[in-house]
Image (cartoon, rainbow, N blue to C red; front, side, top):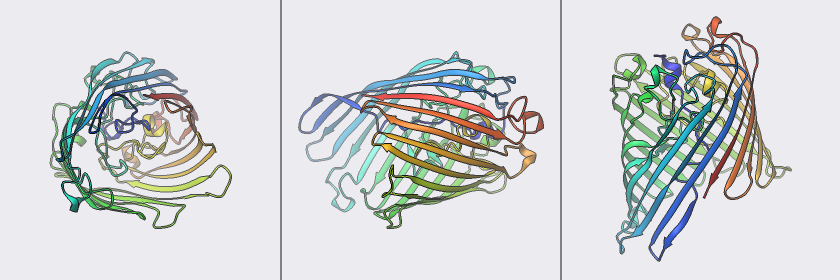
Length: 440
């Protein structure tokens, strides 16, 4: 089984999550609602080059398709002045067709239908004025969980296919789309309102073999204000399934992760600032860490409202990226569509610089360009030096349909034979994809 690059890799989740999905109202009265939910996503992908991560592919190109449909019911019901009960149950059908992805994690034969969401919860309403409305929120079951901006936890979204270990890590296809994001078992207590002090206490257990079925206790404490949010996170990883764990993942049993994060505009209207520092105490090896700083500016008085940002991130040699995922848009936390999904460095053993430019020529259209530079810290562990440019668009055709085309140009410094990951050469890779997403 591969060491850290694969285990740090997670697939890119779309800008659609269970909490954002549309719903069709089946029934409603003063304090009760029953909704049907439908989320369908389909993508077409082509990479001129293949990568060595799975050990399955040869030099050449890959073309494939991915898709999933999530469908089910959600409800909320007032409890006569003692809060609101809520819940959801959703099935998810997914598949991959064609060659499978450019890293070989899927082979194009994956098809599965399983439950994705199955949870119940209770919100306190106005029972506890000191904690604000719905200041107590208790839920349990199978659900997607996000902490901060996804630097440490953004769902259980690593969706490997049949390309590894005779398919024992297969989750049923849709690797890039990250079709399955819900943790299998959760118990979550959220305290506090939308402003001021708030916090979370959570128990999360994964059923994802590629994540070694990791079990975690998570605590957060945040202060939310108009100028920004400052937060602390503590993660105690208490158990893994040794049958599926790599040597690196075995270190999760007893690993403790601490982080300090902040995001906001510091009171300046067009400014965006974000940063996080995470430290990991592993039971048998050295302490690891990761951090980033990011600043952006919106030119609100200029045509097309340009937005420009710069981010520097650093991940130590043995840093465990846990359950990071796609949160604020392309580039977080999959830094480069080729490097972030197929080639590496997968947010470990690396320093990464990113410059992003976005414009909005139409109210329903955003066009962006991203540049990434990758600098390996310890090249004896593998060389993922290189750079990448991605051009993309987000076109919201109507309230139900979004189209997202992307073209990437990835240039590695080294081929797989020279210590990198690209098979056969270090030539430029022209990568393309288009994703269609619809909700009702």
